[in-house]
Image (cartoon, rainbow, N blue to C red; front, side):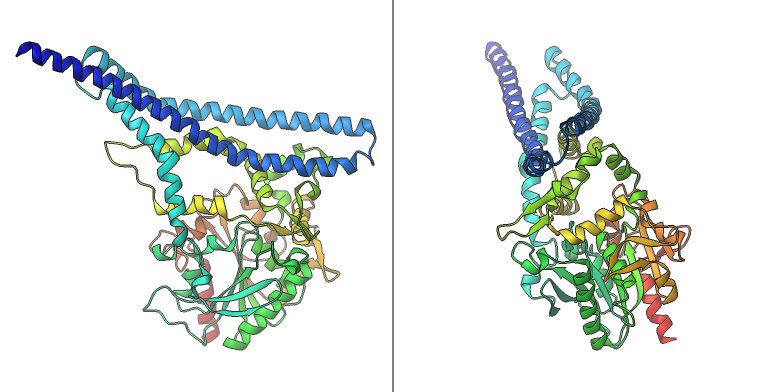
Length: 512
């Protein structure tokens, strides 16, 4: 009987070692599979960029001296090495953080196994590690795919009526998700201009979870409209759209909205949509149609962006050219490659966006603790769905306007570095027309820094609301009506007004 027990103990120990080895091999396989996916996501835009680079340089080499080209290439090599060093350093720091998290438990499990001590053996530790790697390679991607039905507007379902359209845009009315709320037909309407590159769906993040910037307005009974860009791949008129076309289409939509509700429109732009909306107003085409403006995390003067300014300053002048990000479509029209623009942001923020950093960050986030199963929050899944799927190419003329704002500062008298209809765009027009303006920015926004968003304050008066967190927090975290900075409330020590509160107060002042 004793021999049988001893044999059973030996077998159990042997099986424990075998299981530990099997778990380790499974984890290693998933590790390389997962990291390869993160690396591919980073490298594919790089390979696309080399194609554009070759095309442009084939022409430039014929028009520049060999010495100039050689010097530019040496500067570019130095620039690339600097980025590589930053990425490598950040990767080492993240690896160190990962090892600090994992090594104590790994060492304890190894000691327990070798000396037969109580506590988790290597089998349990490697099992948890294997589950952690499986979470990154299988569970997380599956959660991201599954969130697609809950993320965004889904206009194809017919929930939000199409009100008007032009050759380039569609105008939808956003109805409340709260069944107890009815839209006020005589209320003051708001027209939302989404970002171009980031896509409109970030403004309907998770409507079913009460996290939707656009529905924050609609659920207050506000007549809420959003301008949606048509598919640029199949819409030639959008491919060649100019800033003037943008302003004219916005004017048509504002006319339609004002005719429906009898009141001037509040124009509300998010990110690049805010810059576009400001230019539309300053062009004079919206006079009498728009009496209030809201911009959220919108780049007004890109030259004040510390991160991107430093990035562009280090980039050799020869290569600071939109041509290196220009895609030629099958019909011959040229557009700015949206995926490549997203990749440029990763390069600018290589310390946090390098593949190994992103991979290990997600690995640590999804690490199972205390035997609990790995769970991926809907917020995390939706954010990653947006990052992976919501990139759009842009019309070159519109991209050129943003490019100019990031390379040429606003003049001392408040004139922007772009023109529309041959007319200089000056902030003084907003003061002259007494257009009320709320500027919202993120305190930890590393894409559109505070200085970039608040540049107009050097030239005119505007109300400011500072939100905690980063670039999309207003559209995600704070769009929850129960959050600390809910958009329909006042919040913070300085009693800031959220954009919905700002609009509601305008409506009340009109009634008074």
